[in-house]
Length: 596
Ligand SMILES: Cc1cc2nc3c(=O)[nH]c(=O)nc-3n(C[C@H](O)[C@H](O)[C@H](O)COP(=O)(O)OP(=O)(O)OC[C@H]3O[C@@H](n4cnc5c(N)ncnc54)[C@H](O)[C@@H]3O)c2cc1C
Image (cartoon, rainbow, N blue to C red; front, side):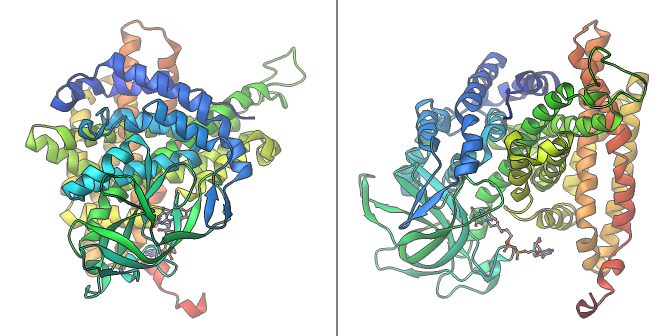
């Protein structure tokens, strides 16, 4: 059976030593009171909840799955009790605004908590994850009345939320969606259509489920410019907020699927369901983007959580499992064989996981800090810069971390040999759970098109230059420090290559849009490595500083060794990626479909 220990030391290293998060937060009036002690206390308590309440339900939830009977969904044993404990502990309120009953803590603390929840139990964590997304969307686009009715109940966890976009014939291309919304005389709408794959669409955790549904008005223009957003509660609320009649939205079936068995993936049928418009007519996709962006970062956190827990277990196994002798002679002569961690390739598998998980954590928490500055900053220029960095790197946090999590959970499984493939050890569940994160919230291909097409070429590289400026400043500051050369040089080198590649792709894409489509996935991975290089260089600098100051904590030696591994063994992948990105669209587009 796998184990999970919240990685508090690593989290604190990132938050306090690398990012100096509380200093940034204290400069924001909304978070002036957030101290290091407060952050640590929340994470410690949160970690206990994750390890003691959520983690024990991960395996049983996977084995039992959700059940569907007569329109009702039953979540696995223990899920309801865990939800009650979550509410009792005030956890749903953590980062929500105080005016709606929230504790108003910064996004970066919420992000760290999300990581632990996902390590402990991704399927369970999706229920509150979608609820928080619905809260954010209604907060940004709801009317005063909608906010007053829904937000306090979503924040307390009394009601929960979903996002209903996908239909049987359209997932990526939402412009084709058919669900209809006919105006009623009282200002509400009658909504009819079928949504599929709706996570947490129906369940037994909360009294009411608040669906955010995309649909078309009768006179809507075709395509994405004709989509509106509606709030459609499972039970129609009375004027005082108590539950009234059952609405015309119901679950028709739940999917049998590869992983996340504890989360109900529902077909939702709407038959004249009563809904209320959120935001403006035909601008629904824009409004929904609040929820989608939040969910995209959330999916990155799902994968960060999975990477961490799989890594912890494979490391423990590699130290315990004995098999064969080290190539350089016995390392554990008292035993029949050496622990497998002596073998170079087992180390490659372990260090690959460690390098990706630790830099991804730094990246994700830093991005959450940008979200805090964008939301609560008082300096307009700093807010805009943070907003741009967030927009630029959201597809990277989503796609790069989820791609790597599938890779690293597979490596964790591989460390176990045949035992990794056997259910009892728990590793195969992590691989199965990690796989969906590359697909939903916009497939990773769509993330890469968003990055290269919209975020980079769409504004002539202005946002990318803002990230580049951070790298340049770091290189400038540490470029002459000899001890830092092994980290700064490959970072600067990759930065230069990214600038050249971006210009080249921009020119090619002007002549032929397929050029962007052909290069986008490689390009996102290159940018992902630029991000990893930047954060590994920053972490290495902190570790070197500590060592120079006489701190003998082996923690810092471990950081430096991992940074060296990253630059020696993982970053070089970018050479092949750049070559492949430059190969252009011809090798992909030459062949007619009938000749495939
Ligand atoms: C377990 C699970 C939970 C989900 N939860 C939700 C939910 O809560 N709410 C919700 O609304 N949806 C949800 N989804 C749906 C999910 O978001 C979609 O499956 C996803 O967006 C892809 O859509 P699709 O399945 O229709 O694939 P398609 O859009 O048909 O895509 C098929 C393939 O074509 C590629 N492709 C499509 N268009 C392009 C393009 N322009 N360029 C390059 N490649 C392209 C895709 O990348 C993909 O590889 C969930 C799905 C699953 C499996």
